Length: 526
Image (cartoon, rainbow, N blue to C red):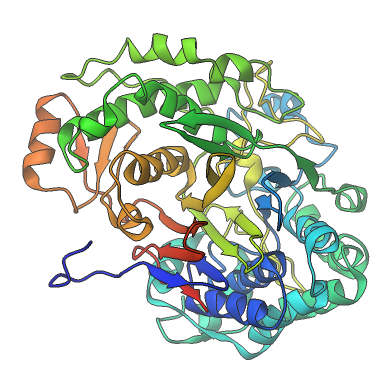
């Protein structure tokens, strides 16, 4: 139990349904959908699309999503890959011939075809109850009427505004500047797009005038995208990967997401006595940092489009983790591993919804970097993601850029099961940080007995580019201890990611939600 003398928030308890998102209006929309007879899928789609208006620097209809879904009345979990592919004409060899060593984050080469809308359409058709039009209605309303910009959103908006192209500035800098907190932001062009999707389904986005608008913007920026690339977009169903931890099962989305990185990091840490460590102490931070260095190095070698990943079994094998764990000196930081070949960043939204029938949705939705590629379509103002920056141009690499391929993705939804039943639906935002965030959240709950809100609130650390990022929640004595072990400490200007979680108390018949104070959102239930 938290100290009620100190600032903070309690976990939210409810019996009938719950949503946790990074913006209060999205959480409210989800709960209203549940109260109105919709299920968790209807509510999750509605909340996600509202977040595209509430946090447009983080996500939007020009981006991708991944979903883990536990159907009502069942214990199985289904994965939906809503990540788009590179245009058929993209060639790593041609980019190398131009002298490029990386795709970059702002050119048309970095834009993969948006996959989220197709995923939402398929998700609604197969598992929804209220219908796609009902799920789109709140976002249409808010895109037309406007949403007041929240404080954390205003902070990010101002930092990322320089990435916007001329068309992007026209649509996302009202009055020519980043909006201040409390200022209304409207997106009437996106409202029109969503009206077409509500009436026509995926064809309203991937065909006709909307697709033509996106292709025109990309062609003008030098891209090789075609109408056929958009028309061919298709989200795919799959099965999560899973692994055990202290009597629990961690479920992650399979590649091209980086969920396997969380498994490897967890497996490395399992070689140490996690439960015996001070949850806020230097020993835990050190071990997590060293395990993350090793796990992320493996990620950069092996994770790619599932059709091209070659050594996933090796990455997940217990003996691999044991060999890597043996490299960790508990008292000394190891030299840095090679930097990632692909670009990584930290802008995303995550949400989770659980309904009264036991359906649970874990959904993550992103345009990658702040404002994605910065490119926006002229007529409808659709910001286009830069997920292609997740490719490498290294010849022969499984994640080498190529036409029709999906790049390695940073976004990963998560679930945790016990005794074959899902008890937690959760996710941690923050780009490359996410696998480390999943492991920290999971061990906070399972090894250190924290409730979901405390597990989210706890301070975070992360090794990045030769520095150990340490949030201000750690005392100076911990930082000094870590520096003595050879870590170069950096207090980041932005907190490390954000998180949402819902615990499903099957015995008590209650849902318990938590939402990250590092963002503007909340958990709501009824």
